[in-house]
Amino acid sequence: MATRAPAGWSDSAVERAIGTLLRVGLLVATCVVVAGAVIYLSRHGSELPNYRIFRGEPAQLRSIGGIVEMAEDWFGRGFIQLGLLLLLATPVARVAFSIVAFIEQRDALYVGVTVLVLAVLLYSIVGGYAS
Amino acid sequence: MTILTFSALVFIGSIVAGLLGALTGLGGGIVVIPMLTLLFGVDIRYAAGAALISVIATSSAAASSYVRDGYSNLRIGMFLEVATTVGAVLGALLTGHLRTTTIAVIFGVVLLVSAALSLRDHAPADPNEPADPLARRLRLDSDYPTPQGRVAYHVHGVPPAFGLMFLAGGLSGLLGIGSGAVKVLALDRAMRLPFKVSTTTSNFMIGVTAAASAGVYLSHGYIDPGLAMPVMLGVLVGALAGAKVLARAHSQALRVVFAVAIGAMGVQMIWNGVRGVP
Image 1 (cartoon, rainbow over the protein chains, first blue to last red):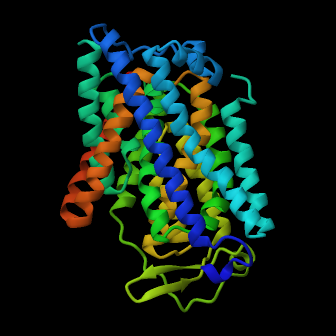
Image 2 (image 1 turned 90 degrees about the vertical axis):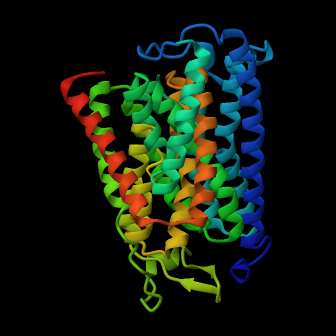
Image 3 (image 1 turned 180 degrees about the vertical axis):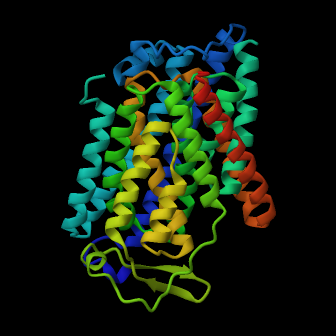
């Protein structure tokens, strides 16, 4: 594998870095979710859940800005949602990192492929569609 | 039932789902959805949102170790992710336009097919097959570690694999699952990759595919933190435990039992959907 990389980082070095990235992202996200769970369950644990009827989440929990605001106010649900957002960001970060890695490897074809994948991800997350 | 009891029960149930998902190779997401809808009466859109989150978590957890071992093929993964992410966004957008009973029926069918696929044996790759020019142009051929050192392999069937991956992405976005069974089908049957390479590359891709749907799910209000939290943590614990068990014991009989049990949940979901029970 290492022989195939014409310049810059070897494939195995890139793979190790991606492995670390995924691990750290997952760990940080899980910690934030657990912290949010403690706040949420201690405040609302005795209330009644209702997931039988779909109402959709309030607008605040649907956008990145709203989630960060709620988490800053120490709302348990906002905190959990922030952790889920970090979890969601991990594969996106992985794709973004791969672009850098392919640039280092002077692999123009895969820089293009990876930019395309990142564009689709950002389109989904930033919400370039009517909801 | 209070939120505390509900969360605890969902957490325990999700551990079991994650364990079953790992042992059958189907993934936790596809097992946790029928559990949430049939057992806890959760609306399938909330269930799909929570399951999708758990899919990202397990993919990151598993991929972080697989990638380091040098099994997964990053170029194949990235190339096919073009198809899976576009399919996932379209599938996720489609969910908002379908009735929940229709989604339940589609889910049941996918569950049955996935369970059946999981029982098939792996077709051994033939290292002497000639290289495929398209795969060579895309630089997909690679090698992987074996006890005898790194062994090179050729990649075949790029166009059918790309098409299957679009389908896998669409189902992932529509139903909130990882579509591992369809992904392995594309890598294993169409591209004829070595077993370890296809399963690890599939797992690696699942996180990115799920992230593409999750953005749409989030903005449509399908992801409820109170539900996603116990599901994500439970499935993660179950999947990690399942991977440990799998490393020690590998019983074909056990896989059949689990696959039949999961298939039965698929039948139940189809039945409920046809009768119009939400």
